[in-house]
Image (tube, rainbow, N blue to C red; front, side, top):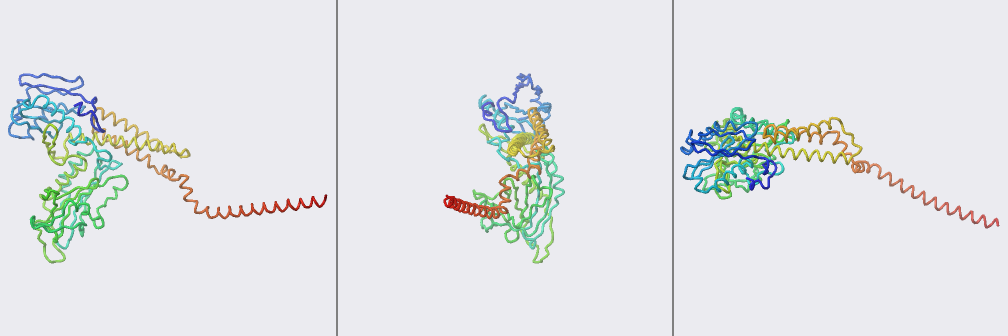
Length: 494
């Protein structure tokens, strides 16, 4: 694990801020090697209470280990890997909670290989979230500076003269979206809105393919698919300012290009028939059943997307949301030691994935808070005449207190609380930097004054300077005449 954490990145572990405990359960007794700070105890003999190697019931194994290791979920977050030597092919699974299991002939591969695989599970999966780089720099998650996200779901009827479809969005909101929003609560304050739009054609072109008996658009057409001129998606007034809006679009093509399928670079058809745009959202193309036009009437009948089809579409959106948050959309992790299955959660995000998001989001918020406050300090020092209001001082003070609380909670493993306080620290720092009194002074610099008033005074000043120059020349000439006359008068008198 020290080798894998030799170059830690923000939001992950270094080689000194974690502890490791080991238990060997032989069935007849346990040998333990626990750190003094650890309070997690494996129940001896529990390995024989459940058939971990048979049936392939991963959900059952996950729930069983959750009951056995439930005592580990205390004040600090504890991640566990259970290794069962049963012979046969080695199989690794990461559950929905904070544990994983490796079953098979693990000792046949060698002790070093088994230990390396356990370490890789801890570091690469539980800590880094299954991403090779461990963390995405910058705005790795689409969260606004105020800690808010607006999920805007849009149903687009490309040509309502062919067919008109609606949806039962309230049902989807209550069944599928509510658990996801609750799970992501510590990371962001999420709100949801929806709308149905008509006459919304796409910008790209498609062509008929005899092989697939469908109209095809390729990945090269994706940058031109979204029609910003016709798709009026920004509807939220509350999302103005520093909040982030993620657009999720269900596109229903017209009868002229139905069915419409997305072709991948390898020539195959996309299973989801959808794509994402980083930091913007995702689009899913839904073809009406049979692609049969209602009639030649100018007023076609209204239809509602079936609950089954709507659930499939929103499952695709949940996968896109995971990708937008930097997580894997599939259920496999291919590491150096082998492939690991990742169980999915009904909430869309497992507990260990939420820990990953909380840690990385906390780290990014703290870095952003420190950068903003540092910029504010340099700005104040560069403008000595600036008057700092008491409100700004309080915002800076509260921001620093929230950042200090964030570091304390993160060091104790209270990731939910640290994510919430880090959002507050960043938001308060942004509020202080963009305070109206500061913005008015910071934009009222000498260069600003010169640029504003020079058009008024420069033409007048030129005339004044020219007049002064003429008067100076006339003064010199008159002075010279006077001196010459005086000299002649003095000579004549003598």
